[in-house]
Image (cartoon, one colour):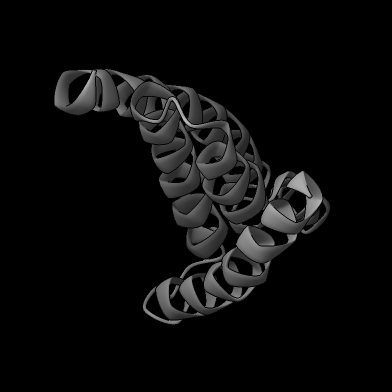
Length: 120
């Protein structure tokens, strides 16, 4: 039955990712993929927060694996970075790769720290 929890979380995470991406990107007049950057950083923070705060495996499956797994998107990040490089925006491509990894790991660390401080 654990797979049903993952599916339920993903059913919320996927549309949330799409809507957040479009909302953020529509507010920037730049080739930089701000929408994907924001959902990935936010998803890393939320997953870290859940990891630091939730001892319950079922909630981790629902919110961590399902919601955050569908909210964040490594494939879109990779595709957008490749497209930036192919379109001649190599500086933006390098910035996207470096900033996404740095911010993602930092957000996950901050989330775990916050989760442990608040509920640990």
